[in-house]
Image (cartoon, rainbow, N blue to C red; front, side):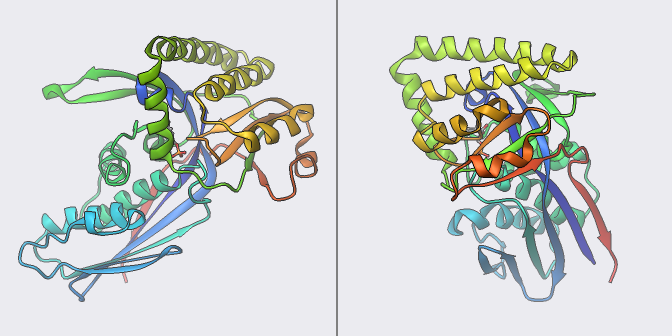
Length: 333
Ligand code: PMV
């Protein structure tokens, strides 16, 4: 049997970094995907194949506890998920997991979150059918093996698809479990979004630590910025309801100023943003920054002009919102 799942990439339209400190955020899934295929083998190993390489670890020890912590970061979530499933199903001999992705890695488009979501659906699908909510919880656990401080916002949008408002107001559900509130934003107007890749890989953990330092050094200003971000997001929600692209774009540029203040922008990103000014209603970093990608809301039918305006070594593409989220199925062989 093969269990196949795919999950979309994501962009953060508003609120990255501040969301880690409890503010709201708006995210959207986009039309780039990762597919994870899992199957049983007879090899007493967990084998993971991806464009980043292959790892094969033995789980033949009596307690099957080869720790994911011994694997390189990029393989940890897969080993973690495979171990978790194997440990609760003693009759399994081996697992092979293959990842195929068209999501650029390490540039703020949620490649690792999409992998965690698709892997959670694919690996668990070999054993039993999970609900989207169960897949989401499993994927966040898997993502924490690489990035313990994750806000969970990325995995949430990769699971459900569409555009979401992620509210880190934690609500007490049964037995003291805490969950963030997620609201789907329906009927959004057609966002003419361009994604431009600075081609500078970034490290989310390092950028988040840098922002933590900013906060430690100036608690008052950071708290003001969090309030500003929450206010801005409320205005964006109204703008979206009113199909008001002009305000949406202006708010993107305002959000970029907050990101510049917490020092996750740099000269390359600032340059890319300025070069798109004449054709955009607003633009900003998407994701952790310090490199990675920017998003720009493009005016009318100006999308084709973007490549010529950006520096030659940058890549760009127009993005459509994905509404499907994670999808999965099994094939009997
Ligand atoms: O660059 P990415 O795709 O890893 O996004 C990071 C977004 C942060 O807000 C900086 C962290 C988070 O967990 O929300």
